[in-house]
Length: 399
Image 1 (tube, rainbow, N blue to C red):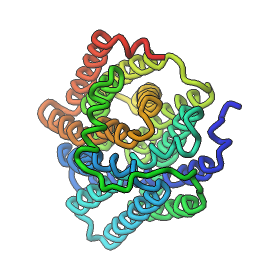
Image 2 (tube, helix red, strand yellow):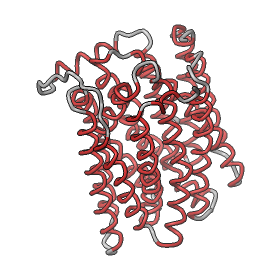
Image 3 (cartoon, rainbow, N blue to C red):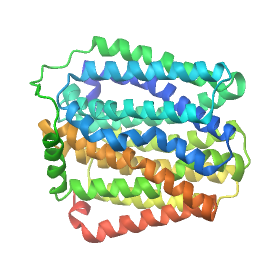
C-alpha cells in the first residue's frame, strides 16, 4: 500500500482534523503579516513582529522537548491547541473592536509562539506512537503534505476573507478550525507508554543536547537547518513588503504568492508520500537546500508577479524536499526515550532561529534595500550548504 500510515486509526483521526486546523492557522498567519504592514510600512517592524511569533521557541523549546518525553501526548496537544484557540479569539475581538495596535499583535504573536514551543515537540514525538517506526517516514511525508496543502489553501482563504469581510474574520476562522482537532484528540487511544514522572531538569536537556552534539549526522544536519533558516528562509518575513511595495500588488496577489510557495511544497510532499520508503536522504537533503537558496536568490530581483510566483513554487518544492528529509533523518535516528528532546533541538534550529533570521533580513533590507537583503541571505545559505557537503561527506552518503 502506498500510504501505510493511513492504516492506523489514530493517525487518520489526527491527520484529518489537523488539515482543517492548519488551514485556519495559515490563513491567520497571512492575515497577521498583512495587518502589520497595514499598521506600519517599516520593514524592520514587520520583521520584528514576525520574530515575536518564533522567539519563544528559541527560549522554551529545549525545556519543552524534555516535557514532551514525559507527558501523555493527546492530553498535551489538547491543552496547547485549546490555548491557541483562545488567543485567536482575543485577536479577533481586538481587531473587530478597532482597538488593535502593533504592540498588541506582537504580544499575542509571542504568546502563540510560546504555545507552539510546547506543541511542536509533543506532536512530532507522537508520530511514532501513532504509526510505529516502520511507517514513520510515510507519516512524516503525509503530515508535510497536510501542512503544505494548507499553505496553498490557507493564504488563499485569508486573502479572500481580508478583501471581502476584513482581517478580523481570519482570526475567527482559525479559532473555529481548532474544534475538530480538539474533538478527535479526545477520540484517539494511543498505546500505553511508560512515562518518566520526574520533573524535567537541566540534566535531561543536557542529555539530549550531548547526544545530538556528538552524533556524526544529527549535528551537521541540525546546524545546516539552523543556518538555512536564519539566512535564506528568513526572506518570507518580507513577503508583505515584496507584495505591496516591490511588486505593487494587492492582498489577493499577496495570497497568490504565499499559495504558490505552498503549492510547490505540497507537490514535493505528495511525491515523497507516494514514493514509499525515502531513499538517498543525503543527496535529497543537500541538493534540496542548495536549490532552495538558488531560487530565493533569483526571486530577490524579479520584476513581475508571475515570475515571482513561479520562483516561489520552485523554492517551496526544494525547501520541502530539504526539510522533510531532515525531519526524517532526525526522527528515525533518535532513540525513543530521547525523541522529544532531539526533536526540540531540530525545532530550535528551524523555528527558534527564525527571530535571528527576521532581525537579519529586516536590518539588511533597511540598510541595503529589500532585494539586496534577501539576496545576501540566500547567498550566505548556499555557501554553508556547499561547506557542509565538503566537510561532512557522511551526510551525502546517508541512505
